[in-house]
Image (tube, rainbow, N blue to C red; front, side, top):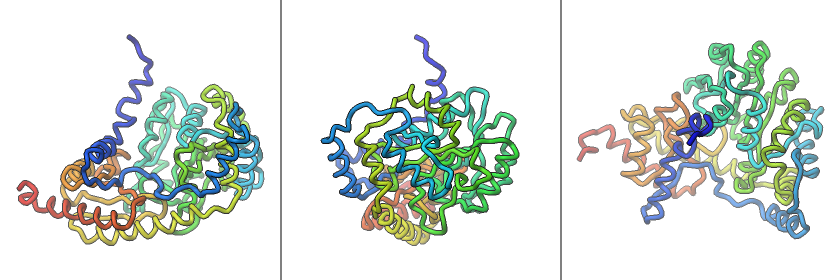
Length: 396
């Protein structure tokens, strides 16, 4: 039998990147004392008012077909949200999707195809390569260097550009590193994009989880408005990943062109979830502030404990739900360290190799577990690091 080439392009770019997470779940089901630090799933519940709004909407009959752009209430709420950042936003700049991932997939379908290339920072979120390659386009990595705090630099972007490049996929705050670009850095990056006529697609799902400084976006820069598309959702900000409610905000012509793509894919989301999302966007809800305070403290807790272990260099994040740790001084790759950590110490973390070549010497740890689990995980991680620095002890 024959298959479309997309199935070849996406080989090993899906669940394979989460192999350690899957194995950890299997071991945990067998009763092993596994501490999971793999995925960024909020450890707080959505605000009760959001759940009440979902129930109200369902009982009100809000379970019929929607439309491709989005329900009027959520579109209006998004216009209000983004008009606070840029006064010219209207409903024509909005498209709603079931989550950031679907929004990003659709946006890429509308911008690139076979023969094109997309620039993306390396390290990168694990699903980005698959999203890009699904279109037939190729990934062009831009190194995000630890010595620069994993912040993209305009000079590195300029050096990476090839004639095939059409889009820069930006992620700020960044996953996995927690780096947050400044307005000045974005302006420099934007100048390169203008010079080479590149679109900027910016994943801003961690916008409300910034620990230090001020969130900045190319969307807010008037010089970049005509070439910027933002994707985001309520998954992180409102601890609601399972509701799958996201959006894309971009130039009116782009959104008009992409509307047919959206309607062909899914023809709208669930109206009752749209109503809940509109409520979330329009009302003061403390979930993000609670998570922001908690994750900032937990990142510091991880960093303080792991910095005392031999061979480990934690790099505290500026935002988000994760901390990355350089394990290269242990003599192990991030992949080898992560698998050894699971098998020998029953701690599950993500290997840096899931996020690109620049992160191969790192592991990523989730901040979404209680302090007691963090302390025990740090003890176990430190134990493996200590053994790795003493090969004879580890072999024994």
